[in-house]
Image (cartoon, rainbow, N blue to C red):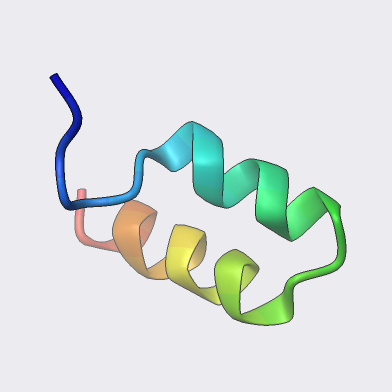
Length: 33
């Protein structure tokens, strides 16, 4: 079952591919924890 929210893994993959916005999103998610 797919969710509308992008998983951390998907965002990490985008960040590793050079997506600066994706890296920022990972940082924001982990700061909230």
